[in-house]
Length: 138
Image 1: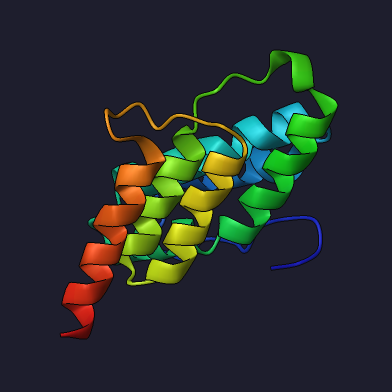
Image 2: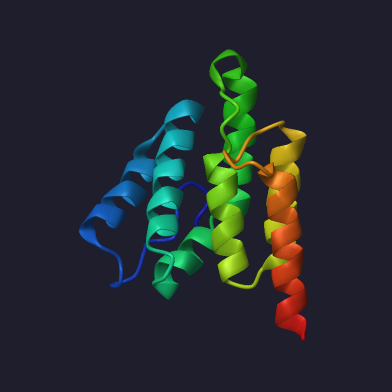
């Protein structure tokens, strides 16, 4: 990954996915960067059964947390409490067996007081990730 753009997706990536990455690379302000990165994560999440997409999405975690933080600071009045990016990242991290990172993402979402749209929220998601982590280490 270079300092401004994202790592170019490999030959596995669809043209639509590559276009999303290019769109992020061309974005200038925090709101556009956030939405573009969220679009990439959502696409990765939807295609997470394909290992390359899942791994690519998981690798965006640090970038997304940084972009989200800046977006939140600069757009405080227009930020909603939906944590779709956090939910999707925690899922792809869980799927790539990066359980501790997935829990960290959920904890960060709780710190921001975000909702994942489920009854149990990010608290329940953490419990499910911990259970998956325990099963994986058996």
